[in-house]
Length: 110
Image (cartoon, rainbow, N blue to C red; front, side):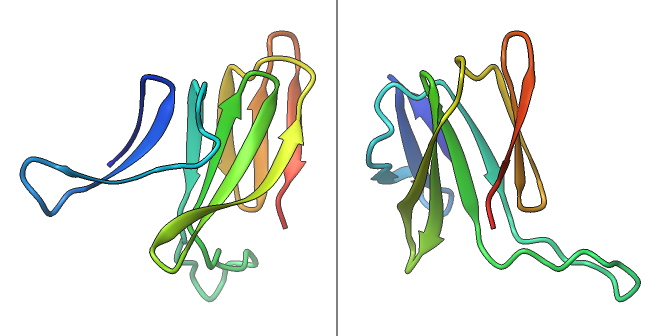
């Protein structure tokens, strides 16, 4: 389970009862919104290449911080400023769509 508690993004183990805290993501203080991109299976007919990693985009005030799963841990790999506080985040392949107050932005994460 991944959730925001007190402005920090926390990762929990579903195989333990109660759920064991595995990690608090670095630089996640103040996070208010996140989106997860997971590897997808595609058919032979599909022209879309399957994604090879689990990624998280976290909104922090006027920036997006990107993490990916590496060696069983989420590691930060990029930070992108945006013009306003994000109100929605949606992954579509390698693109992250960011909903702002009066507009949308697309961030390409290749």
